[in-house]
Image 1: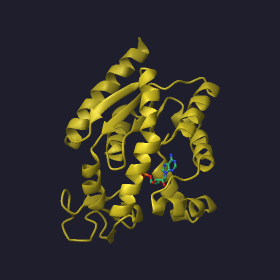
Image 2: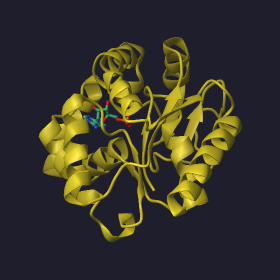
Image 3: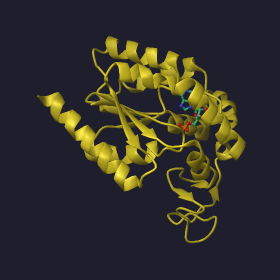
Image 4: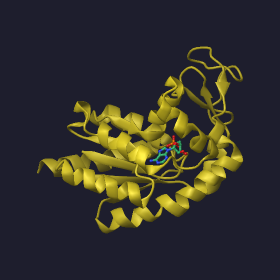
Length: 222
Ligand code: AMP
């Protein structure tokens, strides 16, 4: 069960990945989270990545490809994984194809969550995250905390991610359309692309993806 999640920023890939991890027991490997952890730890890699991320630009391929190809060889990913945020351009997609070949594995499916640009802007510009634990996520309109600016779960301050400012969101969307969207044809040609309507509720999106992945898993065992 080697899966990748595709879709624009703010499509809900992280939310769905958390649920699928619980359903199918595959690790969720999210490049954005890995990079943010490097920044929080103050590593050299984090320092290099931060200025690209704050500007909404892609971090250079060498850094990301090395990080991911090492991660998918970890013991917990031996039976499969769910990649989120990678690949994001042609170069990364071919590096992933090569890694699969080297490891004698293959991609089970590419799951695409589709959301319109204006919805992405609405979702991301209202997103607020906990300063202590960035997986505690809120939205000023859609999912507000009980007390404005304060995390319900641990009382910490809520902040806006630097790259969730409107101009940066628009830049991230531009990059998605120019560099990541062309990959859809690559996976579609290989018969691996599955599309989901990301404008539906998180529960509905989850039900659809779970049903598809369960069928794929069944097919793998046949
Ligand atoms: P995300 O959390 O997936 O929205 O990623 C946040 C930021 O991390 C992106 O805007 C990029 O700057 C960087 N990033 C994450 N994944 C990649 C990738 N595969 N290639 C290049 N940059 C990435």
